[in-house]
Amino acid sequence: MKTKLQARGGGASALWHIFSEGGVGPFYAGVSSTMAGQAVIKGVLFFVYSVVKDVLATSHTAAPGASPSMLDLCIASAFAGFVASFVVTPVERIKIVMQVADDGFSSPLECAREVVRRDGVRGLLCRGINATLAREVPAYIFYLVTYERVKQALHGAGVPPGSLLVGLGGGAAAGVMAWLPVYPFDVIKTHVQLEEGDKDVTMIEVARKLARTRGPGVFCDGLASKLARAVVNHITVFITMEQLLLLNY
Image (cartoon, rainbow, N blue to C red):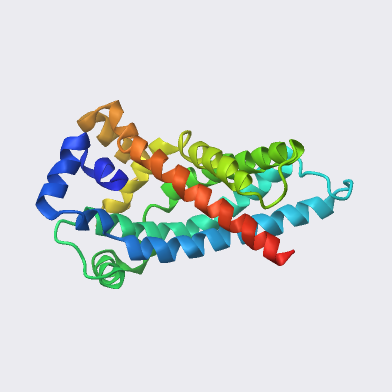
């Protein structure tokens, strides 16, 4: 829903038209690539975040078991978002093209082949990388710092590690905070990744075109559906992560 609203606008009436024409099928376009891609993206993200956070913790003297400083959390989050962006870009290029295509693709592999045929390997791997970095780096700072602070507050209030309440409260807050400040960059990224051809269109060119043709409200198209998804998505992510951490301990 979010991608279709960003690409085409029209609000609920546009979504109803898509449903009346194709049923629920169009709303699940790109789902397999998203599932596989998110598994890799979140794995890379949390791995890099954990490693950088540990390196920063050992680089200065701190009491054993002390909570990471705000600066350490921001640096680790930003670095994790930077690295993850290079995985996010091709995954979301395929997802966006599949979700917006009128005729549809039989599989993510077919879509990837078509993107490579039209834009080359670089077009698959790199188109939209600047917009992705502009979104992912600040988004993951808000995302991971929010979660860490909510988690610390809940633990301080007596909620035990691994409690579902930690994933529930922290995941919901983190999901919202990851998207509200950076959502306009996501709209721009969607349109950058829908472009084709040898010339890479810039974020500023896309932003100006969108504002001129669809007005400033375009930068909020699909926000409600994105936030609804983000809450459920990241509650699930953090509950799963906390349970896996308990198993590791």
